[in-house]
Length: 153
Image (tube, rainbow, N blue to C red; front, side, top):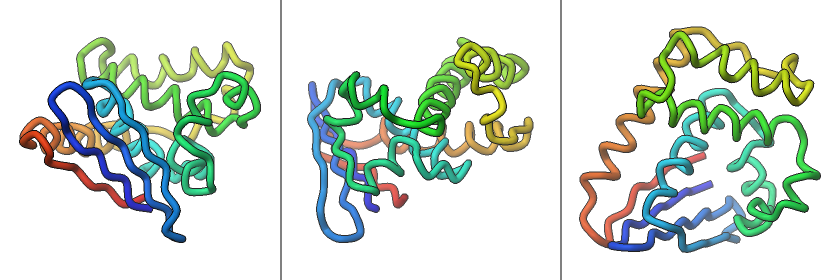
């Protein structure tokens, strides 16, 4: 699946084009690409098949994955993807440290009774994800208006 995020001055456009040529598209606020890029890094790095982008590849629309009623029906992998994407964003901004990253995820998943579903993570894997996330955000920041970052999932 091709994920393309086009930079606009006040709004950005996310388009996910599936292998069969179908696509889902949404205009989003100026800060949302950061979270969507975090989802890409997490889902791809940890082979999360039923995370945000995996579900889109399976046919869900972006709008469906924003609907609270739909979200309630998604399995543990979708929640893990969300928790990890938020944690990666927090690590990037300094809101949590490398030492706090894994315990943060464990605490949130334990609160849902799903701590046994967390992918195996170690410091090396976390640093690998952070490096990829940082590189993609750097690419994003350097884009001119109308430019796009493209990622393959």
